[in-house]
Structures are given as C-alpha cells and as structure tokens.
Length: 248
Image: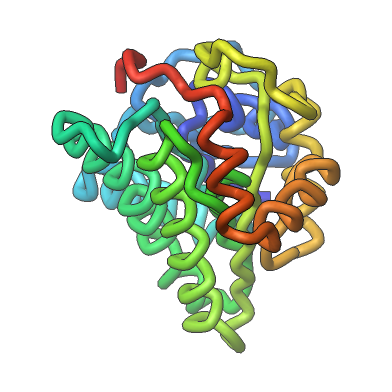
C-alpha cells in the first residue's frame, strides 16, 4: 500500500503512522517536525506546514512521481486552543485554526485527488472531531473548524461520486495526545492514541462516510445533535473550558 499522512510527527498522526507501517507499505509522512522513531517499510518524510500550499504541492508531486497515486491519504494535521467569542484578540487564533484545520485539510486532499481520480481508486480521509457537532463554550474556533471540515468533505464526496475514489470523515472523541494533555478537566471515554489509530483505520477500511470514535462518543454525538437548544445552552455554559494560553 501507498499511504500519505499529514500531522505525522505527534498525536493521532504519529499513531496512525505506527499502525500502517509495515514491510510492504510506502508511507509518505508530512509534518512540521520531521524527526520520529524508525518505522518498518519505506518511509518518505516531508517537512512542510499544511498551510504552505506550494510546499505541500511539492511534497505531493515528489510522492506521485516516485510511487504513483496513493491508496490512502489521511488529512490529519490539526491544532486547537481555547477561545472566547467576546474577545477580539481571539479572532487571530480563529484565523490560524481555520487555516490549519480546514484550508490545510482541503489542500492536502486536493494535492492528491486528481491523480487518484485518474487511477480510479483510493480513499481520501480527513480527521474532524466530535467537537464539530455543537459549538463548545470556550472552544469555538476548534468546533467551527471541525464542523467546516465535515461539510467540506461531504461536498468533496459528492463531487467525487462515481470516480472510484472514496471520501471518509472520522470524528474522534478525546484521544490521549499532546493537544488534549493541556486540558485541565476530566475527559470522558479517553482513548490511548494507538487504540484510537486502530479504530480510525477500521473506519477508513470500511469506507464509512462519517465515523465517530469510540462508539461511546458516537452515542454522545447523537445526544448532542438532538438536544434542544435551550437545554444545550444551559448545560454547555457550565462545562469546563479549554486553556486559552496554549501556543499554536
């Protein structure tokens, strides 16, 4: 298999790289930081920020030129930070989060989609979040970005219908990664990153249009989406907030 993963230097991306690495696999790993423990198989590393579209395009063209169209591309790179909608200073945080989590995801998939369409096969996968289903108090930038990512991928899936290329969107709950370790509150159904990677890989292999990991958070997501606004507002207002002082 030929697989490309962004945000591969830490967190879910690093766990996915470990999961997929094998003697018969070519892994193209794109991240801002290129150092990581050795992995089996053929590993090609690209040091690039997904918001740097020319750099991302160069990485994609190098991979395509050497290995052909990938079987799987996972747009995983993402960032998060606490924000408040009533603080003008947090608008710059919003811009950065949207740039990475939405535009970066879109650029990653677009860099490989044409070659995969020509090949008539493969899967484009994006990592969103359960946070997308309702606006979380104190985490509006992240919630907005992941909601936008879901809608972008839904549109892409419709655009690629009938081409042989599948589009999969995965929404994890709380995963034990550097991004969540800064949280100062209890995180329900927290998964180790390696277990999360296994479950995400299963959802991708099944070509599920929208998958929530773990199943307990899938049940929570249904509750969130169906809860009346007046009740959600009352409960969410009392929920713990993500720290606002995390560097992006």
